[in-house]
Length: 443
Image (cartoon, rainbow, N blue to C red; front, top):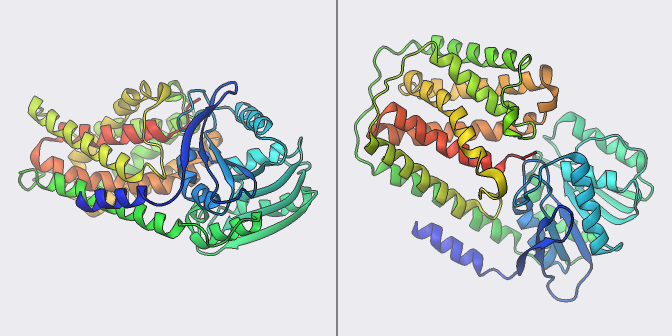
């Protein structure tokens, strides 16, 4: 905790001025405003990707401000602090309204979906400069831009990497291209040398920012926060978890694969989680629910539960969420703003069956727990790509979700030593529901 607080204090002292405000658009658009260092070299509008927010563009925006630009990073409808629901046309209209207020000389920068939306906007209005990080493919006719820079990661999906050729064909102005080695879909937003390159391409001062320092401090805060959470949970007195009558590891894997496949087949016929009104990711929450319910039909978890154990589980969940908020708020939106609150209990209820089945089947098999989570993630992506194409976006999201699941299983071990299976499942479900409610796009 001392390291976490010291890193947060040091981070707060790095030069840079950011203000929180709301554009008077319809609907209102929350944004961050970054004041330029020295003489202003122009104005830039920054647009994030799907299941992200203006927070995720922080490092890049601070660096652009350090390079001399006045920067505005907006929340798309359904994202971050926006209280409006997400639709493609609503997002396009929000960007157009913001550009009307900022003026025709405003340069634009977008990531993933944000890049695709900016390309669509450029079909109807002239943009002086445009920077795109891994833009999502869309149908293109013409891109009215004076200068264009496209950056794509080496490990971006193939359809995103080949999209650059279509952009070059449609662009009226000049286009530059950067192929970022050893980088995934969002990695370029957090590479100091790439950020400096973008700042220089836009006409700003290169090597004037504090990107590397900010990233190092955020990594320190995140690592210290995780270790603090583990230390807190580890201090809970307890005993070794014993699991009687657990099936063999191979049979457990069969159970999980079969349950996930059954969930994918059910969702190809029946829409289960659409009432949550989450863009694409209501499919993931539905898969979690159905997989858990099918597994519970094959096992009988111990159902002892006391008010004391529930209190311990809720306190542990609250502590972990608070540490996540403190250590990662500069790169992710963790607040349940707007109407995200009512989704929290819904996602919580959908999460309990799977984590309860985990306590019956996986607690004594850590390696099996890892394998099953990877397989469930693969089945979710396969089901989305083949049976539910409208949820195909999960291809980009699932690696991070699988990592989250594995971390939650590790954290849950400490709670299980002190409580019971139901309280442990409640702990993991509360943390997952909070993260999903805060990050997933509302419609």
